Length: 262
Image (tube, rainbow, N blue to C red):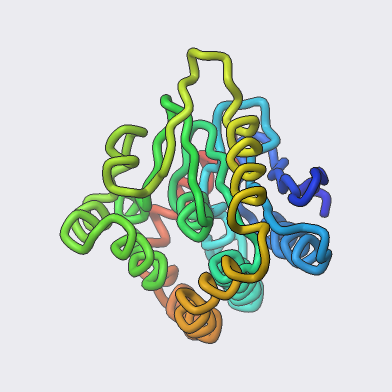
């Protein structure tokens, strides 16, 4: 897990992304995230996990590494592996037996937003932003990402935001339920520190007591998450077809070149 680190705490783990310069979510990063999740879930001493950025730069993640969608950089076999890996990871986070927290510092578009939405609790820095902005670069929002987004933000608001690709500031994101809490960037308090406080409280007062939390979460999420995971190969096939569209290819290539220069 070269791009992801696991820091063990009492009863929970901090899983940090470390893929400079901006945590672009490549196949390797998604694979390492999946491995880390499975390792932590496999250890019965853990009841929770926090997903954080290990970068010094003020960014959670730049979202999906668009080089993975560029037909000049990839092929159908790799793209299929890429899409199945990220889908498997997100679906498993969504139904995980662990209580999960996204400790979001700074920008959190697209794939980073999808990860955060799969978590049980989301904290965002006051200068941060979050959203599914795929339409801003001319590609469709993945179907199950869109469903989850609208379930949380509400159908009317959610659909409009998906169609416009708007990134939301902290206050608006909290108003719509996309984040539960905002941490000021001026009070000197680290978002990760706050996430750890929240986790300890949850494990001491509710989720860490018996099996009630795990069973309730499973009842709420198991069906959707298993269906989501089962559709991974079909989504990969559709994504490959989409990347063949001339306008999409041009847009993806442009953004991929910008990312390569960062």
